Image 1: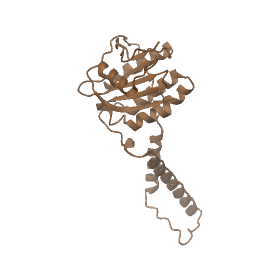
Image 2: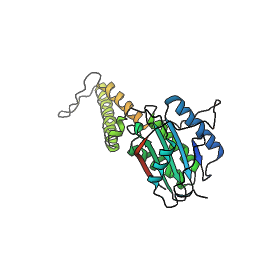
Image 3: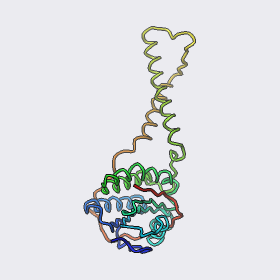
Image 4: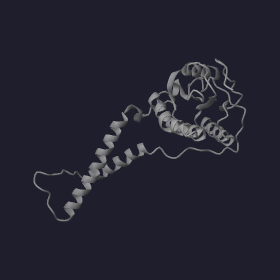
Length: 247
């Protein structure tokens, strides 16, 4: 049964509110542990609300109403995040506090929804979608609520093009070295200038760029010291940052 229009649940000390009952209890428990560990280590407050239906309410309006009531994040840092999912409407939103908008950008939120959450939801695998989405959010934030990710300011296609250029450069440098080691001369008009140490630079640049594409495995945490029922918002504010999506 869906929530009535404009009805906002109480926090009740929990970070994960599955009012639509689509997640396994083991998934809820693991998410609670992971999000508690995230708050303990970074002070960032991330919460999840899954409702059955918006009952005709605009997703973004309802999401703002929730974060205004829950006040996720610390008052001095505004480092709260809400993942809102409306099952019957097939809609979702990542709402981002002021203090995290620099690193958890609108574009990155859209990417997380599009690449991590929506595909799993289309398979009706809500556990994987929510878990992967939260993992991507946590990895994107990286524990630096003030730091802006430089990669978010560069178009993704440009990063790919630069990476290809560097990798081609490495291959060309290797070819030239092998050609010279065989005692052959480089054809006239086809000179390649290779400064000392340039190959090492190309290789290091290639490794650096490869790291941009490697987001790592899913984050997980065990919490023998987990204490449920004591989660409260700490006065964080929101200004509409984030992104919405559907499946």
